[in-house]
Image (cartoon, rainbow, N blue to C red; front, side, top):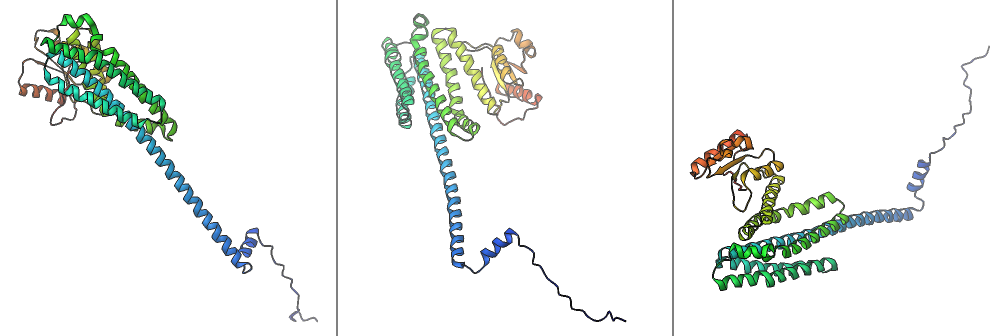
Length: 358
């Protein structure tokens, strides 16, 4: 009988499993062999990575700084050229105001704007020294304004002073709009607008975010353009009163609509608008309301007139008005009408409702 409990020695051969490539790399890296060389290599790689990241950061910073510089430069050029446009409009308005009234009160603001235009043109020239085309445009503006001063404004002001009274309608009508130099200064306005357009195009081409570049310039240019709309309304009305030409009345209408549109697009909606039914040298209430409705269909318009028998006053709602008030009226009566119109339209009421005349 064989005893199976007897231990038998059986040789066992253990085969080592092959190491993966990552394991072999790890063994080489962490072995003591060539330790100093490995340490130096690792340090060098770390330094290279740090230098690379620092270079990327510096590159991004420089690019952002470059774009900010471009944006700031463009906005300043657009801002200055817009202010020059405003000054030109104010110069014309002061000139026409003096011709209408013969009052010396208009001369000081006129001369102030004349000097301001000169200084601002110098500042604008300094900003665009590296652009021959833009510099040529600015020189053209300066030339046109100076020509208008020498051939139109100064001779007419001197003639009005020597005569001792404002020119009659017949005298101004004989020369027409050219007597006021309107077409001449329109050249300066067109040149300034082309200058602004080119600056904006260059900015858009160089900026990464073109929409942001355009919007930022438009936002910062909003106030000068809004101010210009107000000056244009006054200037064109004076032109109409001087000459009686319909071209000035049409320009006044455009200025009124432009002013309302800019306020509306900026989110500054008027709570109520009071429109005079008849306005010499300007739009009548019904015509003005049509233009305002094109911009803001929910405009709260109140018609006002001294002609109580006019059909519009009796059937104001048929023409799109929300309220009516006959002249003359007391402040309390006007306040009540404005309050009722705003309340009925469910518009948030402010302490002092804004009034806009058309």
